[in-house]
Length: 372
Image (cartoon, rainbow, N blue to C red; front, side):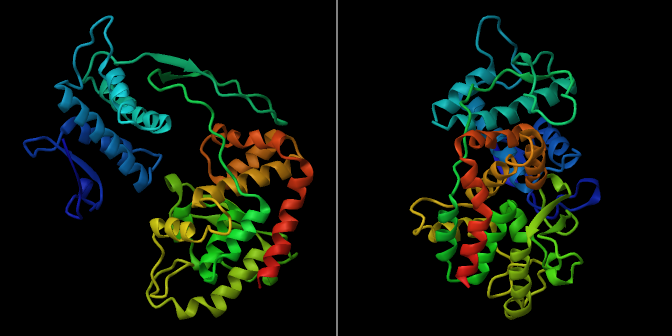
């Protein structure tokens, strides 16, 4: 199986789509079953997966069919009672690579969806795995607990220990920001660590979203900004709001007035652009952060800044409201589809003292003012 990426000549329903994954047989023909699955999951789904998800699906399927070729197996082979299924053997194949357990599970998620899709289309008679019921953990809020019926899930993934994301302390955040000699990069990092936006959202954040905070009635401490998929990249093309601290919006407004005009030579609508007027690439942001993490003493990346925002915000909020409502707030700011994803940050509510959490925003604000 060979993986290629479409050009603009690929026009499903008459619309050109570049960069779509296509898997080819040894003969050079498109694999119809895999192609139908990819089109259904990535183009027709209401979830509107990102290009990064396209790549994840493509690589998982390529690994699976490579495994089949190497082992002379067929994806739709007959199940043999008492013998491991083709998916179970693929799991062993991934573990021998070796891949991290989280990566193995990510691959298995895609393959399980592929089999479920084929089963629903009548292309196979039995699923090569069992379906188990599971129920998400309830989180206390002022509302009633969820009474949703448990949704069955494929019983193919490894049992993984709960991952607790690493975060930066307030002093480490400042050390990281101090390291930037370039004001554009410093503001990019600030926007991430003070709002929790994703790196794809950072690189496409529109200049038009920046306003003069002094022009807003009531002089609020936070400026509500609505992220629209019509203007920028958002995960799943879902609209949401973020809350930008007034001090940060003031810095962004000053940047737009004094520094960006000398950079915006092209037609880019993005707020942050290079000296040539081009928007930053996500991989460039990772590289630039990594080159600047010397003062922190450990690797800093866009995910770490997002985790840092989420954790400190959640811990600070739990001083004033219950954990359930604090989780809902952080979930909405981060754009998580499920509150279960946000729950990983609850670990810090008990581990961090309230005094540290309460000082976080004031410490950040004071130290940032010292940067100027």
